[in-house]
Image (cartoon, rainbow over all chains, first blue to last red; front, side):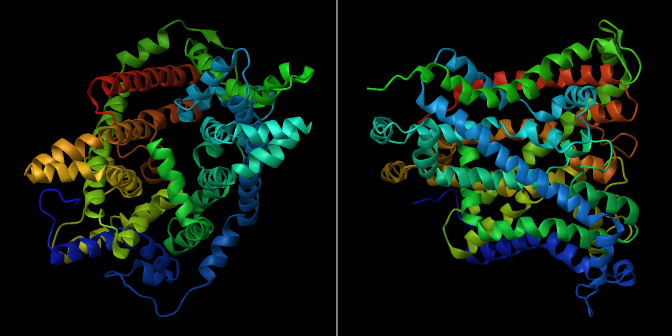
Length: 275
Length: 292
C-alpha cells in the first residue's frame, strides 16, 4: 500500500504522463528535426514540425567545418586512456585497502575519501599553473592522469573486494600464487559487475567532459569533441541546422551506450546516489 | 594464517602508491597552492608579487564579487528548490511499477547522461528570442515573446530551467529507490491505526526517506555552485552580468583578465562556503534526520 494523500485519477494520470513525455522528448526531437532541415525551414515562422526532405549534407557540413576527426580522436584517446589508467591505478589500491593491514592505512584512505568531497572546479587554476610550469599544457597526460585515481572508484571497488571470501585468498596463497596473480585471477573476476559499472561511469563522464579540457588547454591540440561542437556553434551559430547536426554526432555514441547498458547505468547512478 | 613473505611489508604501500600520489598531487597540493596563490598578484607571465590580503580586501570591498555571490546564491536556491520539489513529485507519480512509468523514468533520466554542452546548445536554440520554439509556442497562446537569455531578469532563471530539466530525472530515480526500500509493514501498521493519509506521508514516507533527501540536497547545493557549462555556452555571464556566477567569474578572471591572485582568492572563499555547508550538513544529519 504505497498511497499518499490522494492519487490523481486515471484521466489526470494520462495527461500528466503525456506532458512528461513531451517535456523530456521535445528538446531531442527539436534537435533532430533541426539537424535535417534547410536553413530556410529553420528560420521559418511558424516553424514546421516535420521535414519533407532530409538534409543529410548538414552532417557533412558539420563534419568538415570543424576538424571533427581530430576532436573525435582526442575524445577517444582521452576516454580510453582514462578508463585503462583507472584500471591500472585503482585496482591495486582498492585491493590493498581491502585486504591488507599496514601502518598509516587509515590516514591514506582518509586522503582518498577527502578527495571525494573536493569539487575539481575549485582547483583548476592551481593545476593549470602546475601544468604550465612543468610543460604539460596541451598534452594528453594533463587530461588523463588527474582522473585515473578516482576516489569514488577506489571506494566502490574496495567494498567489492572486501566481500571476496577469505578462504579463496588463503587457498591461492598456499599455492604460492603471486599477488599479481591473486588480483588477476580471484579479485577481478569477482568484481566484474563493479568494474563494468565503473567503466561505464568513466566513459560517460570523460566523453561528456567540457570544463577541464577547456581550462587546461590553450590550443586545439588535445581538445575534445564537446569543445569542437562548441566551436561549431561559434563559427556556425547562424546556421542552427549545422550546429544541431554536429550536436547529434556528439550525443549518438552516448545514447547508444545508454540503450545497450541502460539497466546497468541506472543501477550505477542509483548506487552513487544512495551510497 | 597469512604467510608472511618479506615483500608483504612493502607491498601494500607499492599497491596504493600510484593512487595516493596522484590524489595528493592533483587534489591536496592544489588546495594549498591555491591558498598560496591568493596572497600574490600575478598575471601568469611576469614575476609574482606578494600582496598580503589585498586580493581579499578587493573581493569584499568591490561590488562585482558581491553581485556574483548573490547570483550564485539565487541560482542555488531556485535550482535546488525546484529540483527537489519536482523530483519528489515525479518520484511519487512514478511509484507504481508499470511499463509506462518505467518508460517515463528512463526518459526523464536520459538528459543526465548527455553532455552539458549538447544540452546547452539544444536549449539555446529552443530559447532563441526570434526563431526559438518556446517563443513560438508563447505566441500561439497569445503571449508576448520572452527574452529567455537576453533579458537580465529572466536569464538566470532560464539557466535554472535547463539544469532542472537535466537533473530532475536522476533525483527522482534516487528518491524512487528510497521510497521502494520503506518496509511495507509500516504502512500496514498505519492502516490498522487508521492514520490519515497526510500523516502517513509526513510521519512515515517523508521521515523514512529523509536521509536520502538530505543527501540529495547537499549534492545539489554543491553542484549548483559549480554551474559553468550552461553559462559559458548560453549567456557568457550576461546580459549585464546577470548570470555571472562564482566559478564562471573565477574562470574569467583567470583566462580573460589574467588575475591569478584575485581568482584564487575567490576560489578560497568558495571553498570555505562549500566546506561550511558540508560541515553544517553533517551536523544537521546527526541531530535531525531519522536513521533506519
